[in-house]
Image (cartoon, rainbow, N blue to C red; front, top):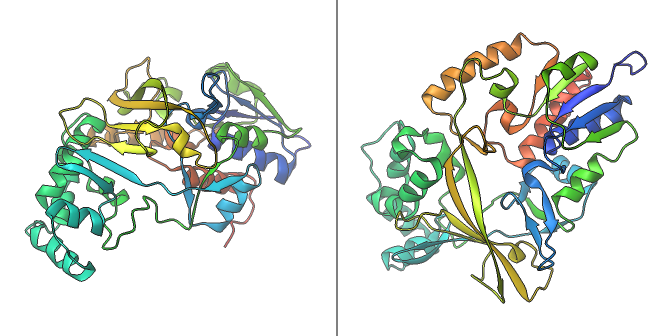
Length: 377
């Protein structure tokens, strides 16, 4: 596609999806774009800042750990920032003690007070799992089939109710596929080849992505449908239902918020500790200095995370994708297919839970399609 008679492209949202599209348009086709964001900063929910009161690099909208097994994706993000290797060792604080997640051989032996080897643990878990469930119809049935009732109730039942605001029986079984069971002592939350966190924070990475003569960035600039007529195409990474004025109804999301605490020393000795029990109202606690173990700080910043239903005034985080949501989504997807001047990208634009690596890979793919370039093999 030639840029000679091409009007500028409008990109709504300055997170990874929008920044990658803008960069690819600029580098591959010398196409100018304007990137807008309603917030007063770039990087979306990945936004990170160096806190003035502690010097700690805070993940302002909750922790983000980049992980991928795709070498191309890893090399791509490392063009725009130095990523330090990071091992995410999540713990779960329950009434029976503190355990490692995801469920692994140590978790099983500690929870049941046993000394099982991998073969024995696999057989034991199969014996306590619900073998009568052949085709799990929801999250709860999937969990009971995989790990049995005791582990399900200890680690997932209450956490899921707090996180999603509904019964696990209302959620799709596919959600649990993100949570593996390991019959080894590997307590690394991610099994991907490459896992890291940028040394200078995600905002710096996004700023570097957007640092190109063909890219203009306007923050504190909300989307207005009237903008569309001034641009050759729109890449929209906001909520797809918002783009269409919620005319088919609102899609369901959960949002999260945090209580911030500054303290001396070390608060919990780990980056993330989950609290699955219903006896506490929050879901997990993050200690931000542990996301940058290459730094040293005398003070600490702690975020206690709560989950709630998204209202019109809230930032949507997690697509719920209940049956009613999927019916509404289908209507918006039909309208999107009939809107040739706009491409929907990112988590909110596609109404899917997407990790950062997938957002980047899909942004690369959709830009190549837009430019009619061959996809990498």
